[in-house]
Amino acid sequence: MFISSCGQRDKSKPNKVYMPDMYYSLAYEPYSYNENFADKSSARKPVAGTVKRGFVPYDMPNTTEGYQLSKTKVVSPLEKNEDNLRNGKANFNIYCALCHGEKGDGQGILVQNEKILGVPDFSKVRLPDITEGSIFHVITYGKGIMGSHASQLTKKERWEIVQYVEKLRNDL
Picture (cartoon, one colour):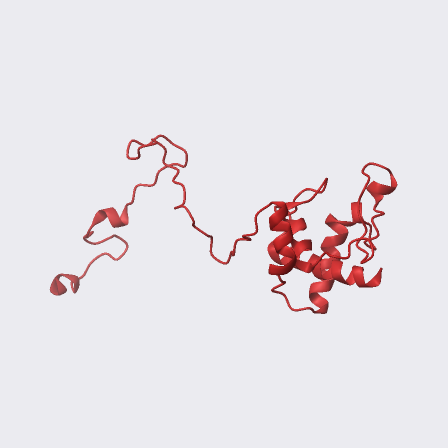
């Protein structure tokens, strides 16, 4: 084998192919019919419990009990700094201020125009028992008429908003 590899050959063309299936694998079109699988579909589901790289799932359930647990069990993984507050403010103004107002006083443009009612302010008098964990839980799952923002915001962005909301709570 070694001697045969030492000879003159045209390097623009492949030499002998050992195990051609490794070189020329057959790719299936996604969602196409495939006899090789029991469900006849080439699109394969990930194994149950699969978690994508760099992602840690939020394991609190979307229930009243999960909300109560989040108050004591969920803490921010981010350090409190100006960058996080600045990013949190920017995202708050995009996603939250329409209802909650730029100051967190519950007087956003939609409330002022009476499109929605009953939006709470973030003051410690009005909501004395919320914590960073419960704020994160509400942003993730929604509460009352507020919908979930988990599909619009990454986990890090949600935690940045939590830091900013905590700052607003101290300012109110």
